[in-house]
Length: 316
Image (cartoon, rainbow, N blue to C red):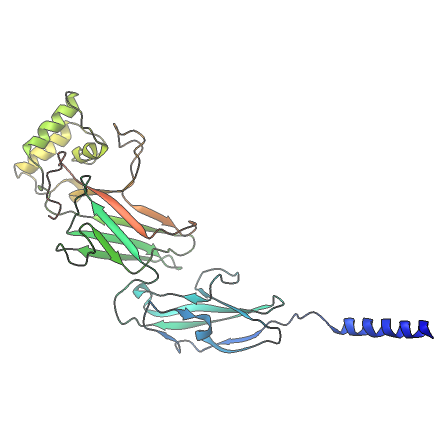
């Protein structure tokens, strides 16, 4: 009798265990119709739940994620997105749901980006632009280039004009936003200032450059050597003196390439300070989408071309 009872108990356990089949059914998920969701403020999050029309699954809990267009086919890392005024108009998004058994489903729709003010999104960016003596520079342009998933280039130009306007401190600028290029692409941040080519350029600079060329008194900083390269050919020669003389005499009204200043990422270490042109020094920050951490601070050192004694007025 006891063997019969034991057999029945084993049979009941096996039957019950066999009835607990694994959950292989993904969540039922549908997105809201295209254009029904509107993003108006880039500093607000667009959550995956904002785009979902219906969601059901009997295997809780359910994890959510959301992708922008072209962000891959893996389950999203985040459940929210930010948009900027680069994204005005319809933007394709994919919403994903994953249940406790690991079953995944997704749906795709578009949201309408209609920002009510001009701004970048995400945390913040901080720019710095000072002379080698630490003086703040004004009247310049911050240029930011990045790409969307269709490889279109988006350029943002921020003009820093009158001292005190739109600045946190002299030689610095703060703005909401971040430089995050689409997968496979890169972002570029650079500073441009091409006004007042004669600013700080005098015959005394020509004398100092001449002494450097003759080896009588070499320029004591890689920044001064770069400033002495008036024609920007990667070396300091008598041709640079000729260019500066023609500029001082009014024979020409601008320096070669139309450039007045050169900006180098602050903190860049020249492998050979006596010859800063080899290897070529960077004049921009380049950010790859695959970089482990996207920088938010971009300090530059600005050099007035032709001004090797740093006498230029940095505000003009």
